[in-house]
Image 1 (cartoon, one colour):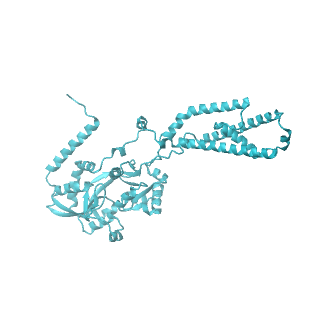
Image 2 (tube, rainbow, N blue to C red):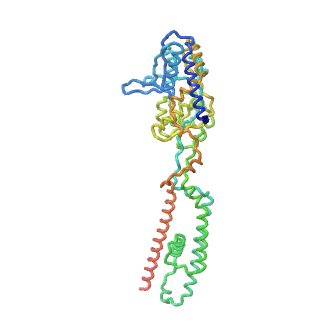
Image 3 (tube, rainbow, N blue to C red):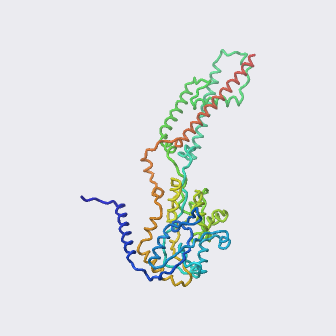
Length: 477
């Protein structure tokens, strides 16, 4: 019975077959231009995920990553043994080399204290005059590790559905309604007072004239009572007022029912803060700064910029010394705070994001698209005119062309598919997630505003009522 493989299963099967073929091929090949069992000393510094150096509790160090894998393959291929000299910066080394492990490694190779620095370094014209570079070990593009955008607070989410112009028109409409209702109310009460022939003449003579404060307070409270459905001490007895209030309530009901779906969507659908995907986005974001490693090519290019966005980022880093580093372990710790972005090769970005997922249990970081820099080509460095340069270059070329390195890298970098999956809004719509309190936070905020306004209107109404009553009793007595 036959079966069909999906494209994903087919790709995995193809990768497995190629890996097996490469392993068999490399294991059956004879040593290439053997070095006759010579012992070499490799300088290596902390450079995840290729060389991860961790100090153990007993004071010794453990070393893992892709580096030890291809170092062992190279030693077997060229028939030599090797040992490591870990470049760990102390106070003396920092004073001498400025804390840069790259410069430290270069000095050791130039002074013949080690045979090679195997972390991988980009060849530049200046560096080529000092040391030899082999065929490149690894090449890839640059990206940035940036904090994953957080969700904006929803307390004022009810403001989002309408533009400022709409809110202004609503405010003008409310003032118009208050003025209209107050005017009709005043006309109705004047007419009612004129038709009341049984009112006491003494009270008319002794009654104090209505002040502007009493007029504004009484009728403004009356209007608020109508809008908030509180009722009040002033009865609506005129047919014209009932028509006006009824029309207003009808319009309000239609508006609420027409736009309630839009408002609810704005209240319940989370809105994320702007995402960072380019250097321009990073400059616009005031909450995230950029960490620059000043002893690597990409960092030096940014710091040397004379204009544009690179100049802006470089100036920000110079004014904030906590953004300039040359120690990778300190960069890792600083980046983990979630307030910084860091531009480096994509393999490092994936490694860092996956490790943070393992520590925190959630995807706090994400990787941007490729940055506008030339791809990085990393090579082993040896002393100038070294007799091992040509032999190592031939072996590394064979290793690269065999395609083994990418598979070793995949085995070293942890998997974190949910941190790299593209967000599809349709998936969020299809999920049935219980509505949480934060989804309706702004709705309760509006409810609180309405309740507070109604309570205020009720209290002011009672204050004015008892004040007028006290004045009336005083006049009578």
